[in-house]
Length: 205
View 1 (tube, rainbow, N blue to C red):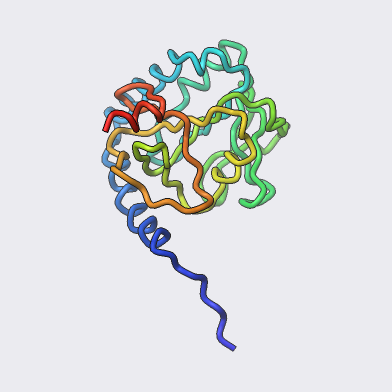
View 2 (tube, rainbow, N blue to C red):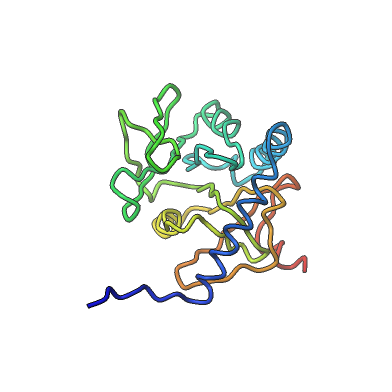
């Protein structure tokens, strides 16, 4: 008997096309320009009241052409905040955040991003105040397009009390992304143009 093929939805097909397009858009921001825009994004986020009040903040270690977050990580350490990074050592279906301290060793995973391999300290989801989210694209309603693995969809679902903030280059913006039931909108977006609550993006149409 032939193996049953997964059902392809119109939204899923649109997302595949958009991923290819948005990867190129993000890769167009490279070198000195990427550093300059990442610094502006980091500055806007660090100045936000949301960040200043947070005691535990989940960040990501940048991979490929993602927005560079090292300045935010260093600032959070300096201010004595708990810095957490995503971990997939239990598989994509069971992601979690682990405490990342200055001097901890990071190793490249088989699929690219860096993760902790020693002294891994899983962190209580309920204690996280802010989750900073990467992605390929975003729209005015705060919806984001991820990489298709569902890791952040699961992490955001596990942190309902935290503020979910996307960091993107401006070229990653689209008018409207296709939506599916599992998609989770963000509370705020930060680009090189500044920090903006999603409610303000939506009202600026």
